[in-house]
Image (cartoon, rainbow over all chains, first blue to last red; front, side, top):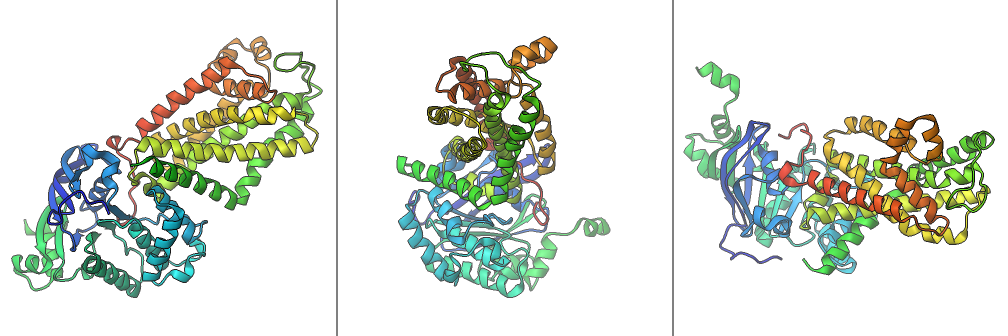
Length: 256
Length: 269
């Protein structure tokens, strides 16, 4: 674990971040916090700017306007080393299909500076927690989508991170697998005190006590617990609250 | 980050690349067949056409297959450099490159490690080619097989860095295939890989000048001398300088402040 900030401090802080692609604004003055031991859902329709924000948090892009701090370390100042306490699950599959599960995880473990012996111990432990222990020697190509996702989640936890960010991690999975993965990640926040940022456009993945950040057209339109967001919008369900907070373009046109 | 962290990450990146290469048997055989076709068919045909006088590093008259062997080693490394870059563009589009780029190590270190990994693969391919070529009767000094190793490391790094630089400028996989055609063939043909440059000068002064500014020419010459346990200092210096320029360009190209461009995938934004 990288202990660089007191436990009371947010694990992930995004402050006044704006970003544009060739003049087209993708994010506009975005600020929010992800607390330790909390599941924070970043909810937004397609095109809201979630993946752009995810790319800034994982330093695939540099945030030129605003700042991002991971466990107190400013990404712009500390550079790549600030990513040490971060675990990441990308939207796109990122496993090597021709390598085995263990070979894939060992590769990641080495990138994080773990010895082979330590890596193997952690690999066995993480895979056992995800009911994947018996698949360790199989090539990733032979696994189904749900199992590949589990391997990616195991990989994100291998170096004992303090913050885990997941970008639409359940896209393309069947409902039972989706539920199992969402439930497992919720459990991780409770049992390990992890800070989780879960980007999604699927409302049923969010529990009423979860922290919620609603992103729409690059701007934050609501924050708070899911329950408080529903109350603030004067609706009774998160579906209705989301519809009210993120009106579609044609709906806005009709209202005019 | 400690030295051990860097060492483990470096070993991990190289091991993964070598492992992937060994798993992809088709890639291994295609890498082997290409230069062998040149050596066993093209060189056999041209052996009677081209007369080669004694020139360094050779101490006697040589046959055409002996002349083009170093050029074919360079060709293996050129193709491998481009193929590694192609896989970088593919990995970038498909996602696995992100695992590398989001590790807590400096971007320049990750790229250099990736470059070494690609070079290791190209050296494995080159030695496999030399072994098969010698089985088919190509005569090379045994000592040369050892002394060419450090040269192959340098030339492999330079050609890999060239590919990496190109891949940093190309956003999509389909565009990169075109770039490869525009780079590989002119680079290979405008060099001393297939013919001595004095012959080229006699037939076209302009093309000869282009050959003289092509870093690949110097990679071929450095390998040619290395294979005969000799050193061509000037060629090595040009290769090293080219490596520095290409690598600096690639590191700049992959700088996150320039924006690591990801293709918009369905459902993403």
